Image 1: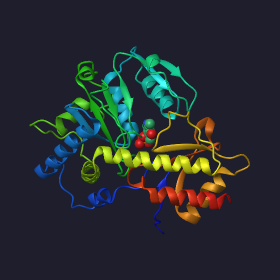
Image 2: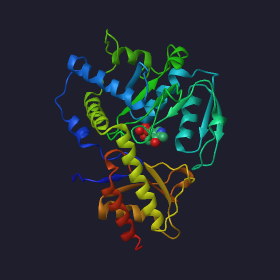
Image 3: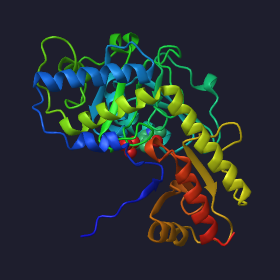
Image 4: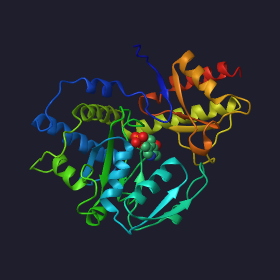
Length: 327
Ligand SMILES: *Cc1c(COP(=O)(O)O)cnc(C)c1O
């Protein structure tokens, strides 16, 4: 079977950094090998830098961003607890689902998809932030912002394959955690006993190659500098949004609340959503994302994250769109 190279401009995965891809091919180490544990320690330490936190419990959860979401809820929410969720998109809906399965009384603060939430309306005791699409691409400051727990994913602005959920949990959340969460696999107390401390104990076999890959990508990210990465994502996002508007497209998210790393545009009237995405993929090797839920077929989601966030990719996509739509 043919394996093709693509420019990945959907809502994730992005193209991994070359360092991250090289990391996947390093010789395998055992998950308790001192060399691997040292690499894991450095990965957790670099994650603290990227998150902007001193939280001891900062680690890569095995699984994608949604595993991070689930870990956050099962470790802090029990039957009858009140959980306030701001819902202005797909992942707010998913949070309500996960919290409901933990037996929580879910209070939704709904805002139309694409509109910003009012932070005052969602204030609660512990603050959980979904940073799957933000970490590495725009500023995130867990300690300065007083966020109690947060999770991310590797395949978005961190520029790694999907498979890990960087996670951080602060002292207030630790105090209020569920001592024996329903989920054995995502029990952060037990996972933490493997990822840090002196008596490193087997919990589950760590995904060695993914952690080695994340370690390499974090090295590349910190060499570039967090500010450098944020600036690069900002520059690409601005060029993309500007270019799309010049081509006559209408941006979907409220002005002033747009992300540089993920741009949603309305599919123009009379344009066949699927046909355009197919043409981009087969003629130019570019993947972009379609809409989901109520917005299926009505919008495109164009990511510019991680290693994909390069001006050359923006230029390529704008030219390919303009050729495909004869604009
Ligand atoms: C992608 C994403 C998720 C889901 O992560 P998976 O890696 O697909 O499990 C959750 N929240 C946000 C904001 C995301 O962008």
